[in-house]
Image (cartoon, rainbow over all chains, first blue to last red; front, side, top):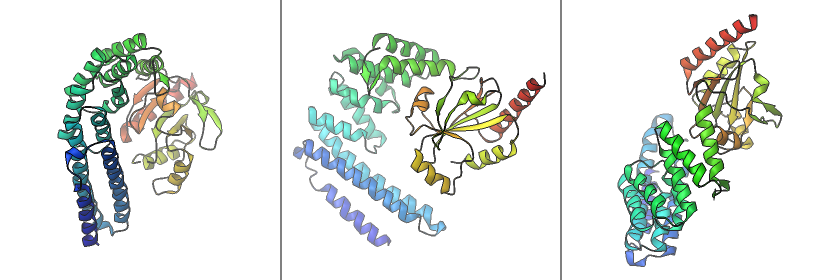
Length: 248
Length: 105
């Protein structure tokens, strides 16, 4: 089994390295690399499913090996995407950076993405779509990129989105409150992902102020898993544990 | 879901007490039904069906990590957040004692 898998992986890696010529860039190349990454993820899932069928003692080793192979292949695909982004500073380069952000990146690759976005696209209206993906990326360079968008981007909706992401990243509670209030004041009617920034900031402020120890949360009104309507307030007089969960 | 076995035993132990464990489920009905039959399940407490991790209840409560736990006293005030295991059990039992004492007055 192992030699078959290794042979398949070798063939797969060989197919990726064809067309490494950076001059052959272009939207199609970016799309092709995105597709390669998706196929790699699907292969990973299939391989992990096969691992579940192994005897228990063999699973951890097999799983680690498979994931290691995945990481190596993913890094190579991302390197090719970043080669395009490094040499093209127009729409194609921007598409490559968007593609990179939806891939598995190592630290140095993430740093390159942020650097290129900051240098070439901070004032581009299309950067708005990528900003939410920066929310959980660590580092002052991401904060600097967001600030540059706020200061130099001509699109109010990009500025508003950047301001919201800045607020969500802020760890200091009272600073976060201030930033959210500013979003609610300056960008109230800007719609992002079907919801107005004023409403998003409003509910984040509400949660911050009320959903904490000593706070009284709003009622929850909804249906249970059998479709029967019920409310949190039906349980007044009882101690309640609320558990937000999933089997996933 | 590492918490489920403990939650099942708490629900069982506290039957008849002024206590309710209420879930906000983010699987959607189909995945929930699968989960109920899996060896992680079953969930033996009532859950709101929020559809997914971006459902209206999750958004209203600003939930961005799972599981998220809130412990409310008998008057609906939040007294603990994000506790597990023994810490959760102690918080719940202390609040039940307070609720029972208040009911006697």
